[in-house]
Image 1 (cartoon, rainbow, N blue to C red):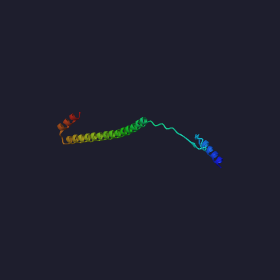
Image 2: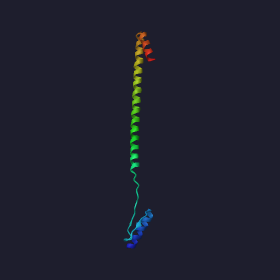
Image 3: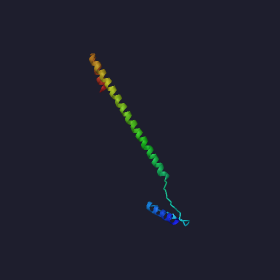
Image 4: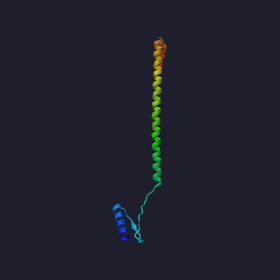
Length: 104
């Protein structure tokens, strides 16, 4: 029985592509793997990811500020045009000319 289970284990390992080093104690095997851990690269990747997130948030904030500024400019321009039209309609041409000269 022991020989058959040993042969089945060998076939399973060969099929799965696993390489192992056998010890001389009862045919047991152990596999080893080497992992490369470089803390500097991990830290650099973390910093880079954080920086990208911060830049994306700053870009969103910049876009929102630009939209708000454009809205405010349009609002003030509209109020100015309304005031100009009101001045013209009341026949206050001097005031209208002053407003026009201030806009230029």
